[in-house]
Amino acid sequence: MTVHALPRESAADAGPMSRSRTWMPVLLAALWLGATLGWRALALPDEGRYAGVAWEMLRSGHWLVPSLDGLPYFHKPPLFYWLTAGAFALFDVSGWTARVAPWLGAVVAVAAIHSLALRVKGAVFARNVVLVLATQPFFYAGAQYANLDMLVAGMIAASVVCFAIAAVRADTGEPFRAVAVAAWVAMALAVLAKGLIGIVLPIAIVGLWLILLRRWRIIVALCAWPGLLAFFLLAAPWFIAVGDRVPGFLDYFFVEQHFRRYLGSSFNNRHPFWFLPVALALLCLPWSAWLPLAGTRGVRSLLRRGQALAQPASMHALMLVWAGTVLVFFSIPSSKLVGYVLPCLPPLAWLIALAASRSSGVRARAWWRASAIIAAIVCVSSIGAIAIWYPYSSQTVAHALDANRKAGEPIYFVGDYYFDLPLLARLHSPVIVVDEWADPAIRARDNWRKELADAARFAPARGREVLVPYAQARVRLCAGPTAWIVSPARSPRGFADAIPIVANSGHLVLRRFDPASPDAARALACPAGSATPAAARRQGPGGATTATASAPGS
Image (cartoon, rainbow, N blue to C red):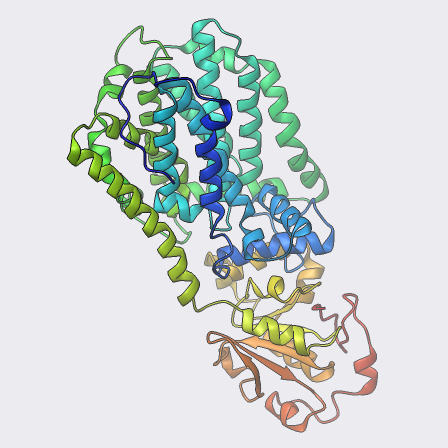
């Protein structure tokens, strides 16, 4: 990204610029944010989980119901999975295609805030907003992290900006309905990206801004029926279709995954109220050091009657309301993840660029350039360091499976669900996950076990096939064909520890179990003669050979 001289506070910029040159900062930001998408392995569990669900969607051809290990997975809506599976189909199954969706969300956020800055304060200010946003280390990392946070942040940004432009046009008597409809479309995509926050946050941000500026009538105008119709036509069909097909889906998705997760205290990542503001300030260094210079003019404009919405001070107020609403909203629940506040970053970039425009002198200009250079170095070096030292990829085991496993030989996961392995090994049906699934404590902890147990509620028969207790897994292994066992080096209960290791990735190992081998049979205490030819020939409904039940994993 190019470091520009500090802009003046005037909205006018010297000389006309062509449209292509005006939008060049957005193109450069898109290239910058995408340059290192494929540098590193998928991070576990999040990137492996979401990319793995997209892979299952592609290889199964079932685009309506997302699945995890063949079980319906309703933690999140499908937009991320659709985009990622589409990228897999168009290009390749790889790390960079797994991150196309968050990259798209980041580019949408950049384009949205650039368009508003361009309208309100001109091209120089717009370029500086893009510079700050694209080089914030937190934003840069979010654009390259395969989960839903940046995708929904981009759609929220697009919705808020379109609503703001529509409100300004309505305030000045210009045509505004087409832009308002675009805001509702972006909000529908935000709902399909991550659920109810996609509609709650844009409405709360824009509604509070207009109420504080005493523009209640504009709120009514923005809620005209064309926008509402566009929203429901885009957002509602998936929820209606899945709710009709899967009993209990709507209660699980909306009540448990939204209201209980927001209001409850039994979920992971519990932090105090001040956690997110502090984390945000640290993750946006060095740019966040400019925020105290942004001033209070936007706060004063909230108290001033008759302030035109098109004025820069009104937009300053919007940015304060935008960032503050997101921070407060996500600071209320006890469970907090830093990715939740990615929607704060576009307005913070605006405020930082505004602070820079109010600074003058050689020292201020030098610090501006230094901030940009330091931020860019932090962005790239962080991704590079993770690419070199990240220890948890399942790539080694995936290569060994691909090279040695024959079709129909089942795979058993012990001790964990290795989210990236089905994707990396290009598995075309589910694996068997071994644990004590009857333990009631599983549903009390918010982890991978609860995710799979919850998913099995919607497909109980399939759940019994793939979620198998230790005792039953021993029976299946002893009676079935050659199988593959993935576990930590010291697996829980010593399960299969005596079986020789075929591959070792550092944090997990791959073992090949042949029930015809006396040593292998002895390791699992198999009864004599349990691996009979008849048993080996018997096929379960999943297409894998086993004597007692289907053993997915092809």
